Structures are given as C-alpha cells and as structure tokens.
Image (cartoon, rainbow, N blue to C red; front, side, top):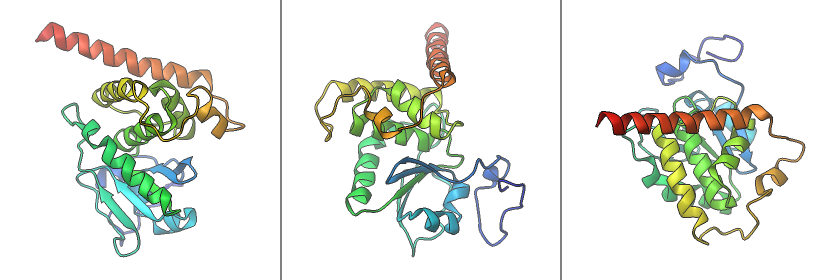
Length: 216
C-alpha cells in the first residue's frame, strides 16, 4: 500500500507482506551516497531515479531485483531471525557500498520492510566508516527512519562488531568518534526518545540472553 492508501501497481511485483505495512514516505538518506528503504521502495523506479540511485543492496532471500538492466545489484540472502549470521556479511556489504561511493553513485540498502536487516547493514557501515559506537549510529539512523528495529540477535552481532571496530584502526576516516555523525546532521538534534528506544533494544537483548542461559 502506498502512503495515501493507494493499491500497489499490479504490474510490479512486491513482496506480499510489504503490502500489509504502512509505507512511511520514500527511502531515507543516511549519507549522501547511502539510502535506507524497503522492498516497496526498491520496486518504485520513479523513486529510485528521483534520488539518483545507481545501485541496490538487497538484504533478503525472497525479494526480487526488479530492474537488473537499469541498476547495479548485490544480494545478501539473509533471513530475519535469531539464527541468521548477518555479521559474516558486514565487510562484503561495506566494501560494496564503498565501491558505489567511489564511482560517485548512490546505493539503496533494503530488505523486505526496511526495519531490521537493511538497518543492521547501515548501522554496521556507520560504525566501521565513521568509527562510532552502536548507540550513536542507532540514534543517527533512528532519527531518519524511526521504524528501524534490528532483531535481538542482530543487535548482539552489532555489539560484537562494535568491539572489533573500536579496537582496531581499520577505518579509513581518522576522525574523532565523538561528533562525527552529529556534524553530518547539522540542524538535527537527537530527541530523548531515540536514546530510550536504543536502551530498550539493549535491555531486551540482555533479557533474552539471560532467559536462554537459564533455560539451557
């Protein structure tokens, strides 16, 4: 369904589950060359062309690539469940995004709903390239797409990735972690509720881990 309740174009196939979700506008800009969205957005060539998108990173195993003759595509076939090892794809995804950037292109990272899998990839990219902690990256992306919510397993993998990133000097940009993302979002302050939501995600992750330990 579109933003105003319009039925999906019958000539364009979109993942069926996506039709049941409200579409909060178009893809959102995370960085000038990096956009985050859903399968609905990936099926809208008018949106993609309007934003100057040249490549798509499809973080799903069931959403089709609609316009392979028009855009560059890369697929990361990950399911949105607690068994999925999305972190094993982080570096490949980051390198792909960088390759699009180096060609002066723009990439849309999407999954089915643009909530968990694709958001996780965008968070990993920010953490690696901007040398920031998960909390700051989470607040930055949440400010732009409020419905993001990586599943608890993905949050755990992001926390592990955070420790790896901050323990090395692998990142290209030698800038101070503090203020890096804030400087790029002039005029955007992080409202208190974004920090509350991040804390809730982490609290839920800890609770699930404790329950798992008790049960097994």
